[in-house]
Amino acid sequence: MNTPAPSFFKAVFAIAHKDLAAEFRSRELLSAMLVFSMLVILIFNFALELDVKVRQSVTAGVLWTTFAFAGTLGLNRSMAVEKDRGCMDGLLLAPVDRSAIFFGKAISNLAFMLVVEAIVIPLYAMLYNETRIFQWEFLGVLLLGSIGYISVGTLLSAMSVQTRTRDVLLPILLFPVAVPVLLASVKASGGIVAGLPFEEILAPLNLLIVYDVIFLATSFMIFDYVVEE
Image (cartoon, rainbow, N blue to C red):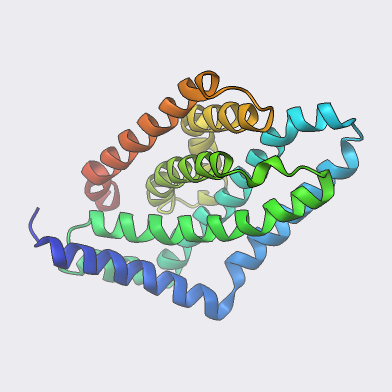
């Protein structure tokens, strides 16, 4: 690494703080993500007229479908704003390691997704009368899944933002790569809602952790080459 660790972390914090401050002034991205998530939850609520046991079995799938699409909306917008306003060139010219841009963007994207999840989960619990989603184990799986989804999504959004069809290209690139983290998240969180023993959700939980580590490390190593192209 060319820069000292304190400078690296300071740059990461500065990029994340810039995104968060800009968003909380305009509230454009969060508003779109929240409205989209609430609409999806309401559509599922009216479409799935099911009994209690069947609703429990679809809880994890409904929530992760909602979070995946809302997260994609946020990922697309976060990089597109930098490109459209000409700020990406300024970030690339900054005397910091390029991976600091990735981690700063990933932290702000993760923060937006967690805010959406914090609002959607109580709404879902109220509409579906499901309280098991407030368990610490479920919230832990939610955090691990969100980190994995955002890490690969931030990397791919940096690749697709250079193209004219970035709004269409990102989901096409992201969803096939994110299938392991989504399946593992649904499996683990579904097992927690169903009250399965910890041994039965250990395999998808391990897959989530491995996925997070691999893609965070991969993004750290190749982000410099991605933004150069």
